[in-house]
Length: 350
View 1: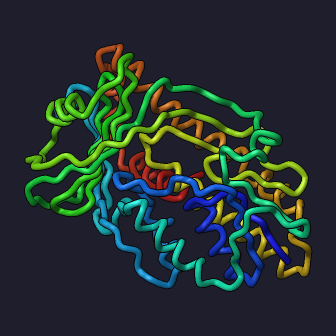
View 2: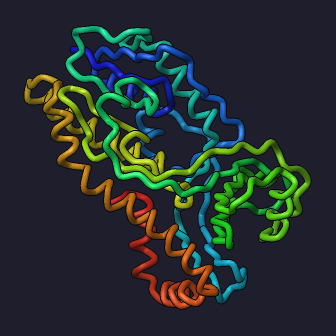
């Protein structure tokens, strides 16, 4: 039994590791080395997903626990904010992208069930494509719901004087959401999704950080990386025995930190489907892709659309002088039930 993974990226590595644990032979195809070094990128991994990663790796992944997140509109006062927290457990864990990438890269490099190749073999029963730019994508997976946000995500790491750093902040500014995500007591990751008409440089980003600075005495701003932001949801998840996966299925706005979390949930479901096939003595083939689509397509669409709705809501709210968000924040602050439900969906999805 053999499964081919097309794409050399974090999603492919995690998936390869999970599938190889079932004693399935895996080949990872990548004609060219893709850029995998993102020094300023962090991943906000939900509590449930982080526990899953630690369980399959049988080791503790280094992270920083975030126990609370405060969301503000442009007004930046307590009457224009809402806070989500869990008194006994973390909401999510901040992990550096490069560290997680290297952990899985090292694990699969010593797994005899996993091989790296340049070309796809003819005897693979299932092909999983995680590469957005591959010829497979262009040939079979080009039909999608797509939106160009006409904005860029600027990511970086700020160094600051030591504080108790367990609260994340999300500020919906007039030019897009700005997130402060704690890495440790001296460092915080920033993600600024800018939708203004002109490009901005590091000097202008520094001014923005100072304007919307919640509590940090900044001593240094690291290198800033820039990424284009789009929304896309694939219309068809598979073609014959080829299954699309990862960002290729659903690419969402980074404001909620749900992109990689959605992928981990997809991996868990795909793993369960394959386990069922193995237990019944059935082949791992196109039927896996078909069942995966039936289970997840509608849920992923609803979840992705919900994140898009939040983004569009705050864009409209800023034009309406933040009247709508102020009333909604007040309502949420008075409803522990809705807060708990919001935390649940952010942690485990739909």
